[in-house]
Length: 429
Image 1 (tube, rainbow, N blue to C red):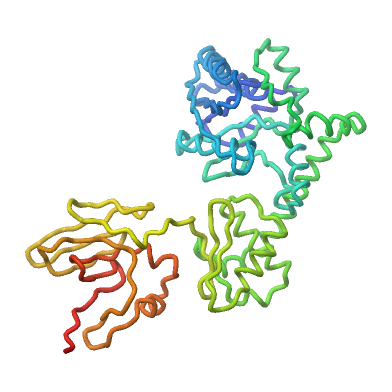
Image 2: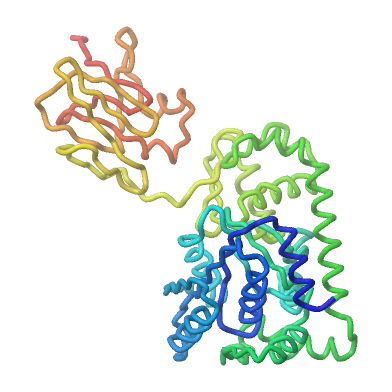
């Protein structure tokens, strides 16, 4: 079966009709674009778009974008170009990858599948990089023809073809493509493998890439089997995606504990933690003292524990000293907390935030929104004042959430924590 026929069979398995093609302008993605253009001639109902990410890392980046635009014009395929800024904190390769997928996420339509030009040689490199990191079965499973990332469906129809096959096709079809000069820089880990290590292995063992592909598939299938066997237990601990209950967790073997945590990480499509990171998570957070409120930083997320539950949260800003004057409504709250609205009637003021509402007496005093308060308040007319910390504990609100709940003040008089309680005036003499 020739490359186009095999490609057509792969596409049929997706049952999709809308595709967003990741186009760098290099050999692989140029072949991918050409194959889809030919397929559209016999499947005219297919809707194709292409996207090029301009990383700005090369002096030739502008000409690459122009080349991709020209290709798409030839094929009459709508073209998107997106310029990105790369966060180099975790290295250029990781930063470029994150910027690339975030940019694609902004443009992809809900009914589209992202198509990438990863091929068999890329699979071998991915497997070796996972091996270098000491990854388990999840990481060694490498790439699959169809997968999901950040909520996007990803399709890799060239994964079973070698770069040599793609190059032969491109030459036969008289395709033109760009060469990224950075591919020769072996300081980058993937280039080091591609340029210096893997050619020697392929020269020694002709079918080396096919063997690595089989090994990766075995790892993937074994991980799927483990997930299937643990699924019922996992659901007992993880009924809400951002929470992981720890009830009975200490009764499991360490292998079962780490497997369940990896399933949680996989559910969020995170990069798999190293063995050392998992051990740190277990010792410093999961099994920390009961009265502790520990946390574990992982990328841009934080895993926190409160009582007998792990919570996945963002790295929140400190809002305790913020005070907002509520003049116009709705008012936009800081740090992605949404809007607080106010409906005024002669009988009451109704404040709304997220799914919560609270009705308070009307006032002519200035209305302020704060996020931090310490001291005692009166929550019930017939009960004495209580410490705020005790109230939050009684309501089961984790410590990091307490300073993210809007508190309503009439000038200096605390009135309500929206969605949780009202404050009653102290009538004691």
